[in-house]
Image (cartoon, rainbow, N blue to C red):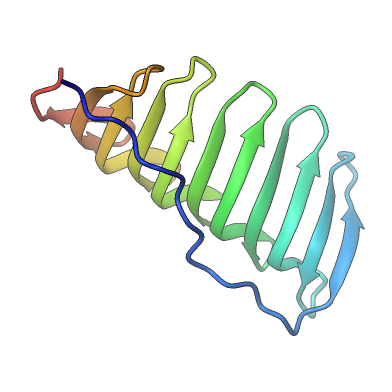
Length: 142
C-alpha cells in the first residue's frame, strides 16, 4: 500500500524583532507589509501581495524571499518551505493545481534531492532522487 503524506512543515526561522514595520507599494501594483532594513528593503518577516499573480508570507533578506515562507499562486500552485534568493531551496512542500503534492528537497527553484510525489488521494506515486526537476532514481513506487 502507498505511503500517506505527513503533516504541514513547521517554520524553522524566528522573525527579527528590532526592525521597523512598513507598507511598501511598487510600480507593478504589488505591496509589501512587514519588516524592513536600513535600506528600506523587505527584510525579516512580512507579506508580499502581487494582485492577480501571487501572495507570499514569510522571511525576507535584503529584498529577497529568503528563509521559511509560504507562496500561493493564483493558478492554484502552493509552496511552503525554504527559500534562497527568491527560489525554492532546501526542504519544502509543493502542491500542484491538480492536487498532487511533492514533499522533499529543492535547489535553485527545482525539485532536487530526495523527495516523494503524492497522488491527489494522498498515496505515494513516486519516491526517490530528483535532479534539476526530473525524477532520476525511483524507489519501487513507479
